[in-house]
Length: 207
Image (cartoon, rainbow, N blue to C red; front, side, top):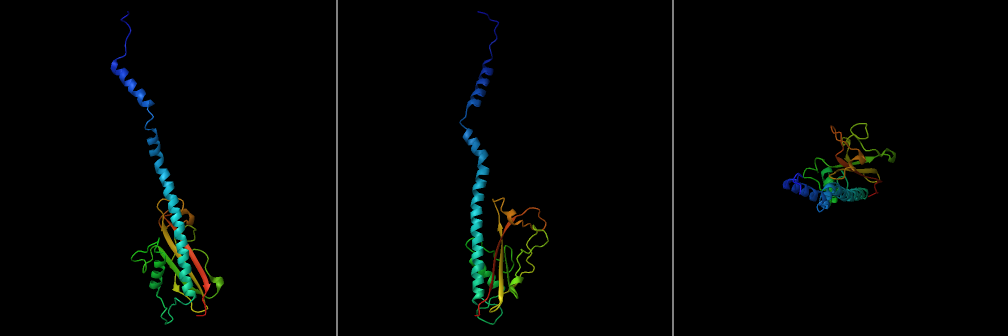
């Protein structure tokens, strides 16, 4: 037998064998794939849930607007008429907060200092004068909401009245929803909140 043939060192053969077994082992593939796909998967799931909750919140805001508007229309809520049904702006805001409390809780200072909920209640002399556009700080369609002209002056009997409600819905996982209203606070280049809007226009009854 020839003694000139060179045999591979045992350590080298062992290292190559371990490497081959490692490459051929597929036991952890599913776990690795799940780890890679878990984040986008759960992001889509939670975004879907948040979209559903936001839709429910919009319906809640619309229902609250209709409820308070009906009370103004029927004389159950009046303003500055010397009646027991008179409400101040703070009392009206508190009543509105109570209506939406299921999903949209108002902060301790929300009644006196709007942070998320903005209400505009006013008498209008002519139905053609009801404002249609969302008031904004600038002329751009992406400018922030401008509440400086908002009032609380519901009309009396047989007068035309408008109730508008705006709510800043904080978006957590739904990355598309803020772009729907293009609401960008001053100094920010990216939208942060989804602006919910509800409006009711009517003529008060002869109460």
